[in-house]
Image (tube, rainbow, N blue to C red):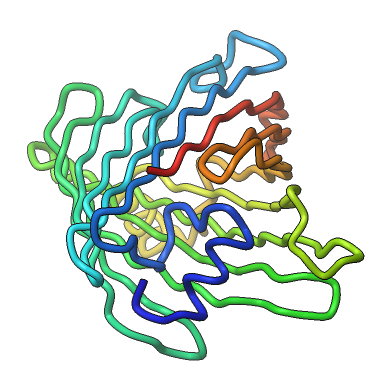
Length: 236
């Protein structure tokens, strides 16, 4: 890690995944999560499994793999590089560039992430905001996604970090940004999110390298989609 304070935060909270914090050189992380819908039949709401992996190439450069569901709900596989841009506004900032496929179409995926560590008498945590653009290289269609994550690991009475970490994430995305902007310009119709959901979850540390995650997701739009999230995190 670039700074000792960031390293300590990672150790206390288990994993600052998909954020502005870089992996240390030679350090890796893999997350496998299963999203199980409470009901089926709505496009994009059925159950699926996602894979996320990172590996530190340099103190400032991270290689990653993101496979699962895209903003549009199609299957995605994206390989990316994330570079640290230093600190701004009290936390790290990183830029990433990914290349892969969504629904069999080639995509370019630039992204920008911001993070901030939080610390108090009851424990320590983090706040991260991660945004990406999914650009279809053939049709030039652009989808946009943004996640805001708040995580917190309480302290035991002894002062040591707990094995439990609490997280709250808000996920939102907009399909076909170009079309939404045209509607805004021509008829004054404000773009509405294609999806927006809240995902509270909790992780439990099984060992120094492995955590289990249990979460619940609920759509904040009219679709009413809901379900559970089960995951396993592994560091190496």
